[in-house]
Amino acid sequence: MEAYLVEPMVSDPICRLDCDIPVDGVACFIFTTAKRAAHGPHQPVFVSGYATGAPVTQRLPRHWPLDDIMDVGMEMGRRLWERAGVGPADVDLPEVYDGFSPFVYLWMESLSLCPIGEAHRLVLDGGIDSDRAGALPVLSGGGSLGSGRMHGVPQMLECYLQLAGRAGERQRSNVSVGVACHSSPHYGGAVVYSSEAF
Image (tube, rainbow, N blue to C red; front, side, top):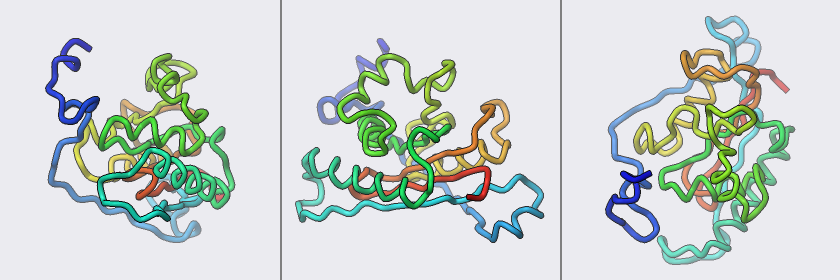
């Protein structure tokens, strides 16, 4: 905490450690039918649903009021759960996008993983701690702040690895539904993954 608090501010209240780092990277995800995946070398992971957000109000690119972000995010979250056939209470593995630390709060609330305006309390109370019993294992794979700027790829990869039982030392028990997000709720999207086909 002491080291974090002495970091230089980029734009108050965001300091240098609240921003992901640029990296060069590539990822490839192979999609196939459920029938074909059942005969592969690893336990299959299924895409249960997805949704994207797009602002309805035109604004200057970097000047989005919080109300716009949350309104679009909440609508995107509603569509996501409707399409996925599961709800926020079913999520074992929330891999929200954290290119900037505040996005964690915005995603948690947009996806209804906590009430609007309560994400900060959930975080302060240790409710997103990957190592704490009863807490949501948010960003169990390190996210973008831990892995670098790949715009949601670390989140998707962690969902796959956990649900396929291939996460090694990070492997969590009893995970069957994960959600991975990219960008911010008003311009990004989310995908629900499951260990069983619905």
